[in-house]
Length: 179
Ligand SMILES: [Zn+2]
Image 1 (cartoon, rainbow, N blue to C red):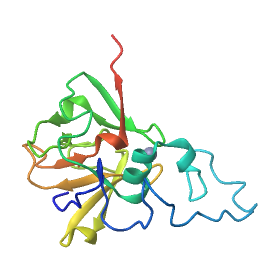
Image 2: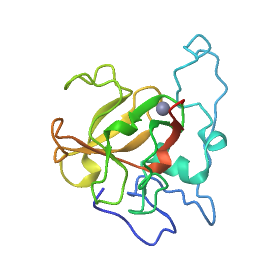
Image 3: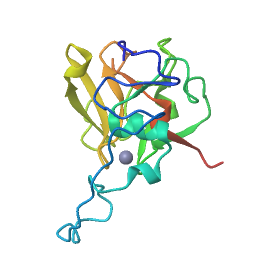
């Protein structure tokens, strides 16, 4: 998340989208009438989920258009309560507060995803995906359940995992641990 396009009020976008939050809309999605998705699992989101209705414009740009919130702007950067960070789109639990640490980079960072066992992320709520938009070998982190873009993961995190999951606050919602 080092390459940001500034000049956008609170969000930077890497140029995937032609749509802007303000001003004239460039295009609208065309939603074809269809019936063959009727038997799909109700918990699996697809391209026809109306994310624009479900999310705020900021949440939409970050999670569905791979936007990146500006550094030091997110509400969870200095948030230290005990609990779980969930996906803003589908509510899946993604990161525990126990793995959160201050990386100094300006985004909330976690050393591992919730559900990780040692280095095995097969039961975690996230998946990794190569992201060439960073201009190098970036690894994108997305929600396994709904494909929401969450942020990126780097290999310069603290021991023992060595991972640094750099996640947009905008992609998360926090639930405190029950007392
Ligand atoms: Zn999700």
